[in-house]
Image (cartoon, rainbow, N blue to C red; front, side, top):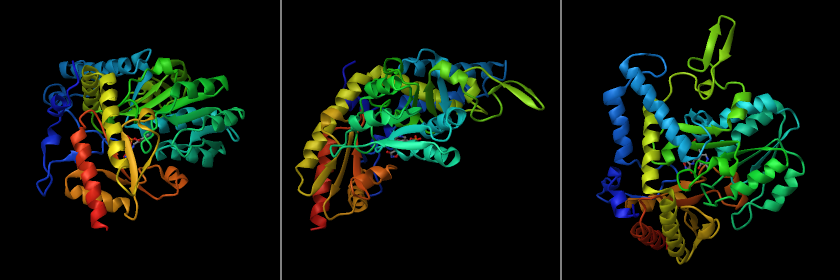
Length: 408
Ligand code: 7TS
């Protein structure tokens, strides 16, 4: 299938709607959450209309069908990121819960006072706070790979930290503010050479790039359905099976057990050991449909399209006097353009753009330390996905000019 953005846009009904003042929605906030194609909406609708039942608990037709749909989605997700087996795919609520699962189940079993965990200065709060909580509880140490002025990871600072033999290196594959695509394979290889495990926050990479968990050799890889054309409420933790086997469970309850006595339990096998309670079944089905959709369009085609739109956006924004862009050049980043406009607060930029139907985000984007590093409280951020167009970028640029005029 050749990539045709106009054809793709027809799959996303929301892109046709208008705002209250009659403007067509120009959705430039896919980094926060993506829009959903009809294929995903219908898969979830069909599930509720035809197959809804609780999973793994019944022999009746609907229970068997629901279980098959839920587990079938897991198989396709495993293929999508090239996991070695479906049992390496743990359903969670989102990236945040996936990282917390590692911090609680692996971290509390394996880390003690003085052990070092290496993070980076460009992390989302989801990959900072769980480790800060463990630090408060256990006395582990945290260090951070520094970010250069260009918005890249300083690998020399990383190599120095590795001399201190960390137990874990945890980093974002792609930054949600700078758009930087980090050299994940190299970071993981260096971590392993130093005897550390590697956890990758893939919230922004899995939706936009072809990810191969085995080629990367990641020990853990976390992502969210809602940023990759799927629904909210479901995410994934990929983990190497030997590692997941060695870990104690995270939450306790139904489904995660093999046997329960009044005073003891035996945990279930993978992946169920980490899926306590009735899961988000329709949402898992929706994620399966999202994976099918992205696969049919082609991840390489999506990445190429986004690259073209992003390069154009950086060019158009850069030529506006007073605009300062953050992050590396287009060839080192995904579909994100974070910027400030001299003399105008980012929230005002976003609010004025909204009057023309243009949806961008303003704030610290859950990466407060990164903004602090750059000496700013906030940025405005436009972000792009497979349905974004250069025409939308033109409207964004026009909108920013308009903001400039209004603020003199
Ligand atoms: N990690 C990164 C790199 C992210 O961009 C996000 C969400 C998360 C983790 C957390 O994902 P969640 O699904 O668990 O919430 N990023 C953003 C954003 O940039 N704007 O809104 C959410």
